[in-house]
Image (cartoon, rainbow over all chains, first blue to last red; front, side, top):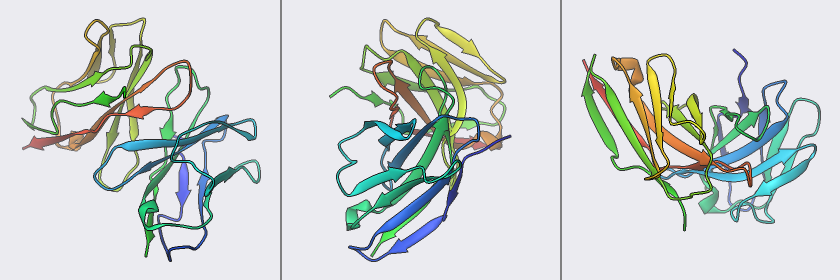
Length: 114
Length: 112
């Protein structure tokens, strides 16, 4: 069964450094998402992406965050200057459509900011 | 603000029994709902979904019930197995956007 893959599984970064999290969505999916889950809290929406542009973003997704689809298979999340509170699990998801279609998630990248 | 929430943080059931996990939502504009299962160290795994024009949908060993009158969603797991032990999240979506709003999760523990 096709799946969303994320790399790395664990990223440790010094505060203030830039970090890039990588995702390979399911190949025939057209909509891509990033979510995060702070330890012990709910999964929170960050951003959705379609047709090479952001279609929706949450308040969490401020100017420090950016997304890119650099080629036909990868989808990345960049945090420019990491803060301690960016420590979380970051999940990538993809779907065929936005309306009434399930989003399928990867296993996440654990980001630890020191 | 409007949110999706769960009544019980932990549910413990005997292997072979049926499990019912509940979820309350407050956004009346929500029209699509999903249940996810999350095992330790893994991402949310899609289980079953339901659209707001339905009140019941069945899958393999799982049934989702939607009561729009009281804004309540439930997941029923028949003949619960040890492999069902995980955290279960409900999530909701509305046509105005494509973000999912997740509930807080319920941990299901299956006793052998």
